[in-house]
Image (cartoon, rainbow, N blue to C red; front, top):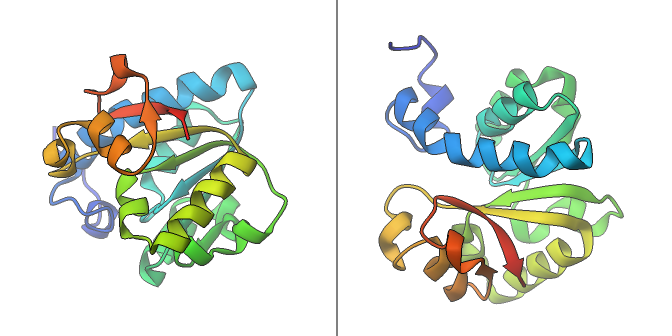
Length: 181
Protein backbone atom coordinates (compact mmCIF):
# COMPACT_ATOMS: atom_id res chain seq x y z
CA UNK A 1 0.00 0.00 0.00
CA UNK A 2 1.43 3.33 -1.05
CA UNK A 3 1.72 5.89 1.72
CA UNK A 4 0.96 9.54 1.00
CA UNK A 5 3.70 11.98 1.96
CA UNK A 6 5.47 14.97 0.45
CA UNK A 7 8.33 14.09 -1.91
CA UNK A 8 10.89 15.82 0.34
CA UNK A 9 10.18 13.20 3.03
CA UNK A 10 12.13 10.57 1.07
CA UNK A 11 14.10 12.76 -1.36
CA UNK A 12 15.87 14.57 1.53
CA UNK A 13 17.21 11.14 2.45
CA UNK A 14 18.34 10.40 -1.14
CA UNK A 15 15.55 7.98 -2.05
CA UNK A 16 13.23 7.98 -5.05
CA UNK A 17 10.28 6.37 -3.25
CA UNK A 18 9.05 6.29 0.33
CA UNK A 19 8.73 2.49 0.22
CA UNK A 20 12.41 2.14 -0.64
CA UNK A 21 13.38 4.47 2.21
CA UNK A 22 11.20 2.57 4.67
CA UNK A 23 12.79 -0.73 3.56
CA UNK A 24 16.32 0.70 3.96
CA UNK A 25 15.51 2.19 7.38
CA UNK A 26 13.94 -0.98 8.80
CA UNK A 27 17.15 -2.76 10.00
CA UNK A 28 18.63 0.49 11.31
CA UNK A 29 15.52 1.29 13.35
CA UNK A 30 15.30 -2.28 14.68
CA UNK A 31 18.96 -2.34 15.78
CA UNK A 32 18.77 1.15 17.29
CA UNK A 33 15.70 0.22 19.33
CA UNK A 34 17.25 -3.10 20.46
CA UNK A 35 20.39 -1.25 21.51
CA UNK A 36 18.64 1.60 23.34
CA UNK A 37 15.89 -0.34 25.16
CA UNK A 38 18.20 -1.95 27.77
CA UNK A 39 19.68 1.51 28.42
CA UNK A 40 16.20 2.92 29.07
CA UNK A 41 16.53 5.25 26.11
CA UNK A 42 18.93 8.17 26.10
CA UNK A 43 20.16 10.61 23.52
CA UNK A 44 20.68 9.31 19.98
CA UNK A 45 22.45 11.34 17.32
CA UNK A 46 22.22 10.76 13.58
CA UNK A 47 25.33 12.15 11.87
CA UNK A 48 24.05 13.04 8.41
CA UNK A 49 20.41 12.95 9.51
CA UNK A 50 18.78 14.25 6.34
CA UNK A 51 15.31 15.33 7.42
CA UNK A 52 15.22 13.26 10.61
CA UNK A 53 12.82 10.61 9.27
CA UNK A 54 15.03 7.81 10.63
CA UNK A 55 15.15 9.42 14.08
CA UNK A 56 11.38 9.99 14.00
CA UNK A 57 10.86 6.25 13.39
CA UNK A 58 13.21 5.35 16.24
CA UNK A 59 11.55 7.82 18.61
CA UNK A 60 8.09 6.54 17.68
CA UNK A 61 9.09 2.98 18.71
CA UNK A 62 11.31 4.03 21.63
CA UNK A 63 9.78 7.22 23.09
CA UNK A 64 12.46 7.54 25.78
CA UNK A 65 15.02 8.26 23.08
CA UNK A 66 15.90 11.92 22.64
CA UNK A 67 16.76 12.54 18.97
CA UNK A 68 19.61 14.76 17.78
CA UNK A 69 20.72 15.27 14.22
CA UNK A 70 23.33 17.02 12.13
CA UNK A 71 23.21 17.63 8.40
CA UNK A 72 24.90 20.21 6.22
CA UNK A 73 21.77 20.96 4.15
CA UNK A 74 19.64 23.76 5.68
CA UNK A 75 16.39 22.61 4.03
CA UNK A 76 16.81 19.11 5.44
CA UNK A 77 17.35 20.48 8.93
CA UNK A 78 14.24 22.64 8.52
CA UNK A 79 12.29 19.51 7.59
CA UNK A 80 13.77 17.60 10.57
CA UNK A 81 12.61 20.36 12.88
CA UNK A 82 9.14 20.12 11.32
CA UNK A 83 9.03 16.31 11.65
CA UNK A 84 10.16 16.40 15.28
CA UNK A 85 9.01 19.82 16.58
CA UNK A 86 9.44 18.90 20.25
CA UNK A 87 13.14 18.36 19.50
CA UNK A 88 13.67 21.18 16.97
CA UNK A 89 16.55 22.66 19.00
CA UNK A 90 18.39 19.33 18.74
CA UNK A 91 18.94 19.58 14.97
CA UNK A 92 21.99 21.38 13.65
CA UNK A 93 23.00 22.56 10.23
CA UNK A 94 26.75 21.92 10.15
CA UNK A 95 29.54 19.99 8.54
CA UNK A 96 30.27 16.86 10.57
CA UNK A 97 33.93 17.74 10.99
CA UNK A 98 33.03 21.02 12.66
CA UNK A 99 29.62 20.55 14.27
CA UNK A 100 29.00 22.34 17.59
CA UNK A 101 28.59 19.13 19.59
CA UNK A 102 32.23 18.22 18.95
CA UNK A 103 33.14 20.92 21.44
CA UNK A 104 30.48 20.09 24.02
CA UNK A 105 30.49 17.70 26.96
CA UNK A 106 27.19 16.09 25.87
CA UNK A 107 27.19 12.30 25.81
CA UNK A 108 25.08 10.06 23.59
CA UNK A 109 23.79 6.57 24.18
CA UNK A 110 23.92 5.96 20.43
CA UNK A 111 25.46 7.60 17.37
CA UNK A 112 24.16 6.56 13.95
CA UNK A 113 26.23 7.05 10.82
CA UNK A 114 27.20 5.67 7.49
CA UNK A 115 30.92 5.01 7.00
CA UNK A 116 30.40 7.27 3.97
CA UNK A 117 30.44 10.25 6.38
CA UNK A 118 34.02 9.45 7.36
CA UNK A 119 34.92 8.87 3.73
CA UNK A 120 33.66 12.36 2.86
CA UNK A 121 35.51 14.07 5.69
CA UNK A 122 38.98 15.50 5.44
CA UNK A 123 41.59 13.31 7.18
CA UNK A 124 41.71 15.73 10.13
CA UNK A 125 37.91 16.01 10.25
CA UNK A 126 37.51 12.23 10.11
CA UNK A 127 39.98 11.72 12.95
CA UNK A 128 38.31 14.42 15.02
CA UNK A 129 34.96 12.73 14.46
CA UNK A 130 36.37 9.30 15.44
CA UNK A 131 37.88 10.77 18.63
CA UNK A 132 34.55 12.41 19.48
CA UNK A 133 32.67 9.15 18.90
CA UNK A 134 35.09 7.29 21.21
CA UNK A 135 34.83 9.92 23.94
CA UNK A 136 31.14 10.83 23.81
CA UNK A 137 29.13 7.87 22.48
CA UNK A 138 28.32 4.65 24.31
CA UNK A 139 27.53 2.79 21.08
CA UNK A 140 27.93 3.54 17.38
CA UNK A 141 25.57 2.05 14.79
CA UNK A 142 26.97 1.88 11.27
CA UNK A 143 24.70 1.40 8.28
CA UNK A 144 24.86 1.21 4.51
CA UNK A 145 22.33 1.36 1.74
CA UNK A 146 22.33 1.94 -1.96
CA UNK A 147 25.50 1.26 -3.91
CA UNK A 148 27.55 1.64 -0.73
CA UNK A 149 26.27 -1.82 0.29
CA UNK A 150 28.59 -3.50 -2.20
CA UNK A 151 31.19 -0.84 -2.93
CA UNK A 152 33.67 -2.38 -0.46
CA UNK A 153 32.22 -5.89 -0.44
CA UNK A 154 29.81 -5.34 2.46
CA UNK A 155 29.33 -3.22 5.59
CA UNK A 156 32.29 -4.94 7.25
CA UNK A 157 34.55 -4.14 4.30
CA UNK A 158 33.39 -0.52 4.19
CA UNK A 159 33.95 -0.15 7.95
CA UNK A 160 37.42 -1.64 7.62
CA UNK A 161 38.38 0.81 4.85
CA UNK A 162 37.39 3.62 7.25
CA UNK A 163 39.50 2.14 10.07
CA UNK A 164 36.51 0.71 11.94
CA UNK A 165 35.38 -2.81 12.74
CA UNK A 166 32.04 -4.53 13.13
CA UNK A 167 31.52 -8.06 14.41
CA UNK A 168 32.35 -10.39 11.51
CA UNK A 169 28.96 -12.09 11.97
CA UNK A 170 27.33 -8.73 11.18
CA UNK A 171 29.60 -7.73 8.27
CA UNK A 172 27.02 -8.67 5.60
CA UNK A 173 24.12 -6.87 7.27
CA UNK A 174 22.84 -3.41 6.41
CA UNK A 175 23.28 -2.18 10.00
CA UNK A 176 25.68 -3.23 12.75
CA UNK A 177 27.16 -1.92 15.96
CA UNK A 178 30.73 -0.77 15.82
CA UNK A 179 32.99 -3.27 17.53
CA UNK A 180 36.35 -1.55 17.55
CA UNK A 181 37.61 1.91 16.80
